[in-house]
Image 1 (cartoon, rainbow, N blue to C red):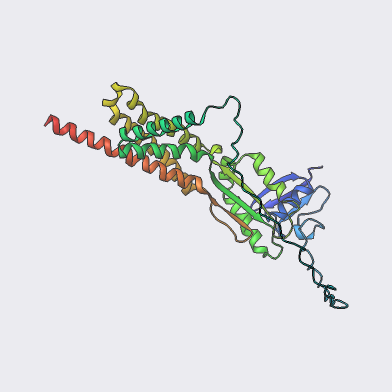
Image 2: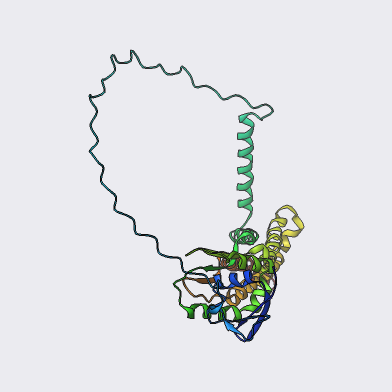
Length: 320
């Protein structure tokens, strides 16, 4: 595969790329019929529409189905009705005297031991809830959501092949991609971008290719994950280490500070990620992940700030 083609997007020149890669750009609507292309041996730059086989062809309409001929003759009814059975069944089958017990699994604990373990677990959870205040439960729940949010989608981009789209739509997509090139290079790996371009090659009518950024591919996702673990540790440690109980309000302030940092990072993601699209052939924007992180960090801030403020107020009242 020779890398010999060059093309213009906006005011920038790109290349060299192969003819197949150039076809993929045309299929994903990054390359429009008016885009200028050139390769070695050509006298000047020419429009992409003049290169045979470069732009995707509009598939022909399906053939008109022929009229379905009626059957030659109606289906004849059966010669005679089916005769009923000669005699009814003498008696119904008697039910089993007792249900059959399942075979015991070798080495498995008895049912009573499993039930006892479940009861003990429920009791431990109930004791933990009784020892935690409402604000601590809010902190703990928000921290758990921050940990799990790393496995949620953060942002996605989808391109659809629509041969009926206007030429101006392709030009608008090229401008959007050019305006957000720095963001794409900072947040999307080169391998994902290449896979997206390759996926656009040979798309049929109304077929799509997508690119998704997950939480574990972002700094916000990883920071939310580790800070969520730290916040949960700060809530649970005073329950098991008595000397830390008098310092729980300081741990709450630390949790509020960590959550505030995650809150700011999620807000910057929501405001800074590209969201312009050209329906129905191109769409991009935030997914569920950053919204979940935004709300979870806000819950941790609220749950950690209130008990700390109450502690400070009681301390001032005692000294007064």
